[in-house]
Length: 166
Image (cartoon, rainbow, N blue to C red; front, side, top):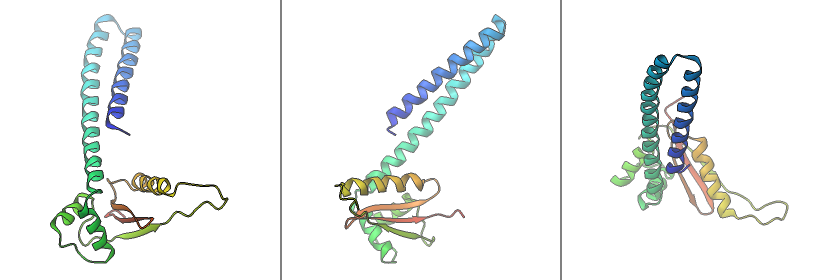
């Protein structure tokens, strides 16, 4: 989800929570108690959604960095080295490896997926299918839990994944 859309959703949530809180307090509390409570709740909602927005912005920045990294030669060299079972000698590739969450010496799994033409004779766009598969892998293997490298090469989707969790 784009950052602008995410932040808009959080602003809308803030407005909704504020309205629900205000209406509920005005119905069930006296004017002074309602005003005191609304002041306190207003501070809480502002601080809460400000924090959530900052976390969201940081998360989007990390994802944007990963997307940029995937389009570099160092990213391709890193995948090539790992597929050949060797440590990369390229400093940029080693930095990318850490950035992508794969630590040196950690266990890794490799998957290669090749979409096949439709069996029913209908035309499908295999490039679109491969890009969709990349997005699916990125969603199913969250970067908070898994280190991962995903690339489309030779009409296949190659995934290298690692995790220190059980």
